[in-house]
Image 1 (cartoon, rainbow, N blue to C red):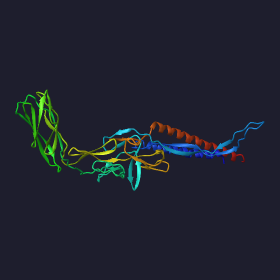
Image 2: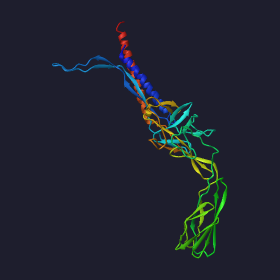
Image 3: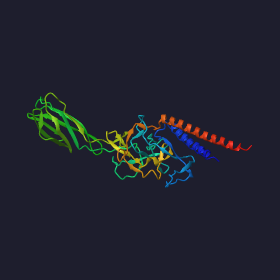
Image 4: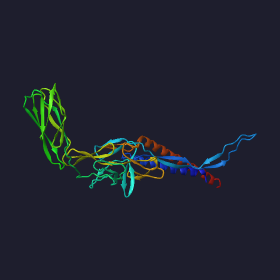
Length: 385
């Protein structure tokens, strides 16, 4: 049989594979986190027709003569360049700006993905669209410590931020210099005990001949006024609460004195959440406290091209992908996280349609090899009639 016949068959097979790969890329042009692939060809073994010969005294050397035996598939390479961002406004839609993969736990196996279309399930766990559990670290008292084991990211619905006892407060603003001697200004602020119960801290500012007397909770201090500046003690301790007086001034015709800050708070419940660039799940509580609830883990590989596609825009490691490196977003070469956006497919339609034409013409050319070889065989069988 003719060698060209089998070369043509190998060409049909490999170009059919190229069509399959290209068709799959086009089919996934709108798949979130999809990475396109490209077929790579290489020639098959070549049959040696004539050996090479070295040059002699009276004759030059000759090169080997070989006849190729067709083409074969060298591999299918995955393109891991980033896709375009697609804003969604959904806080649990996440995109990695840079290298890295989200880690998912599904059926006892850890898989990796660039598809950040996540949501919370009824148990408060952050999951992918197919129910795989997003992996990360859970914070303890608002802190994620190193060396923690990976686990599911969970939104603690109904979590309570404990009350904080007020230990410091601050008086700010201006005490008007033209105030008559003996006249008083009274200012209040809510403070909290260890159980979260609120009481009122009251401060009385009394004008004196030389400045101001400040009293609260049985304690008092005197400040001296000169050219709009108040000098004297910078703190007053009232019932265990230290009040900062250093920001007070005494200029004329401005009365803005206030107790504007204190460091205590009542207990609060979780009211909202947000995901930050470093992958932290931040909870905001009804008492105004903001704390870290959990942090997403990202994974990196020495050779991402060695990952095996597992479906659902997910990958599993192989012997050639290298050891997985787990870390926090924005560190160790891993990209940052963008909340409210998704990474779209990196399929380039113009390139894929060009590949379709190339594959189609390659298939047609190899089909012509087969028909031509068939005509040659027919001529051979017609030699004897």
